Image (cartoon, rainbow, N blue to C red; front, side):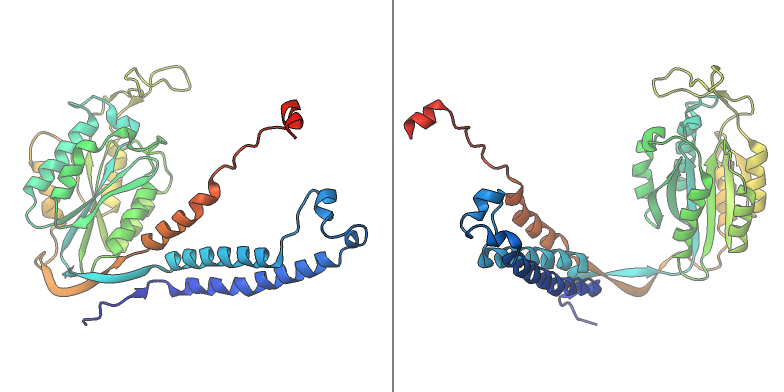
Length: 347
């Protein structure tokens, strides 16, 4: 298929043009009513603005404004419809092994019961996993109160390596550790992969979750064909959670908040997900075991010759035009000087 022509991604937005005839009818109707208003009987038309403080628009001025705003409305609809032309061919993936990493970046991951911190240790584990990987396509989601897709599942693991140094607990404005939302986001990403692909999750966390139904949620994912492996970060003794300024975080009871590795919960999640549980250490065996367990597909992880077409959206052109046309309307009116004795004398 060689068509490279202009078209709209969402042409249904042009149904919005149907609002223009009712607006035009309303303007005509309101102008007709104004001309027959009772106030017209008390003064001539040229004196009414001095009595009411308002000026009735002339017919040409009223309809000129209507057509001007109609043109702006049309430009907005064109932008919403998504004009596009030109495209790029992208190769499609064959089914293969896919591992999506869920990295906990909540405040408890700043605890330093493992060196340098739990989050620092987690970043090193992800780096080790990428360096050892020879087969899997990898993706990364960082989550705390809400999930953030750092990299979708891709063959280019360098994208994840470049993003690792920037991952910190201040990535989330609202603190907390909500795994269920991250699981939902991961499920959407994994289910978009080709059919017959091997789909796995790797949770890297200290297990500091307080959400009911997590085990059942993971079990349903496993029944849908998504396995879940877990890499625990921290120690059972734990440590004080640092606050934003480095001092210990104080809880409602006035004591420092202490976080411990909840291995029992993490093992339960791994068991429900049909995966492995490993505690992170400084050897390569933990990540090696997880990579081996996730590589369950019998198909090679290579791209096929099938291609898909990615169109180049040009919606920004009408948006820029609309902004240029609206900008003069926001300019402030020049302030007139109040009339005073000097002006009266000049008259």
